[in-house]
Length: 462
Ligand code: 5GP
Ligand code: SF4
Ligand code: MG
Image 1 (tube, helix red, strand yellow):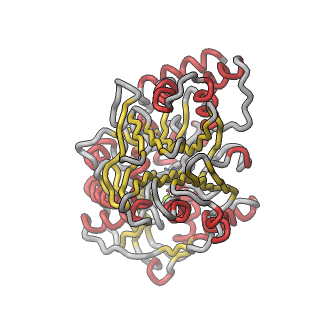
Image 2 (image 1 turned 135 degrees about the vertical axis):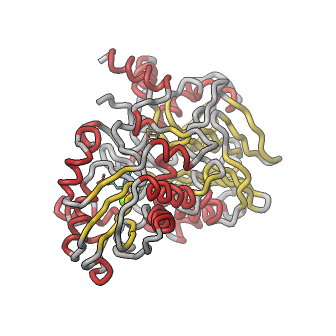
Image 3 (image 1 turned 90 degrees about the horizontal axis):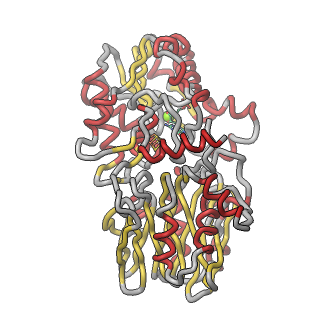
């Protein structure tokens, strides 16, 4: 497995020219909480004065009214962090602050830089000292090495060197810069709230602060938000539109739109396609809360089999509660989910899940339903088989962990002890967004060419 720096699937938020900027960032981050529960932070300020607060935990745990009141200024950026490597080291919590040519930069970042190691090695050879293992610090060092006074010129020079998936928000000189990688792998949207501009990983965060969606940041674009409005620039000539399919399938909140496509509608359509492709005779259709519910509704609608609520999720169990002990983690599914015995008992179930990664969650859920007296379980997965790791910052890290990389469908069906197990095909997936090209690397092993070349180079150097 080639390690490519920190793997992150996070949420970023920025607001410009608002009298209550830090509070708005708080609400925005709260709406993005599903993208990261490990740590969060907000930086606010104006005219060269900045305050920052960050720490481990959920947004409402890290920020009290008192703390928010101290974060003054009309510009704010914020971050929620989900990290899988090395736990939460306080050095890795964002926003990052760094100084560059007598200016203070704040930076929030979502994604993964594939050529992180090479770039970091180059910088270290030229005397840079790293305090964290975060991609964001790499950007900070690359920026500060630059000799130009204009942040746009520096940004362009830095961004063109980065290979991978990223969405950044940078705060400097009373301005915000919002950037998306040239393939648009990670989402980033712009909204307007009275005279203020808002940028966020997902449109649900724009809605949370009452902002109106304007447009997505384009792949390879640098959007500059300043006191007179917004302006736009591009750092790359070669731009494609390849949003991560997993955003639609699992990551994004159902009320978020990406590239004009709503996540709930995408999932519902995927459920319909799944019903057409893999029909089955059954009594009820149910989804695994929360991410599979939309697909289950679609399957039920298409198959004319009644939709039922057979599993209940305890909404008050956070990840932080579950993480610390292994014993608790093993029981996590039982703490999180309960079967409604009266619904399930004696029934033939179609059980919809959005995806299978390691394969362990579904084992526990099928056992739960079997214990509750299900007569038959037909598992339908609303995504194709995930057979390859993701190099773009998503927690699908290596072949060994991916059950469908080394297990047959039949063997997995037997392991679950279910009557049938089927996945959506790549063709059906493509029909869910007919007008959009999406990244499907983890289903096909076909990554964007440049990524692959860089990975091979990195591998050869080891
Ligand atoms: P696993 O198969 O790894 O035991 O669990 C997969 C389930 O966990 C999926 O149904 C999805 O709801 C959830 N999940 C958690 N993290 C991720 C992720 O990074 N990618 C995907 N595809 N699903 C995830
Ligand atoms: Fe998303 Fe899969 Fe592409 Fe990674 S490889 S960016 S998880 S679609
Ligand atoms: Mg799930």
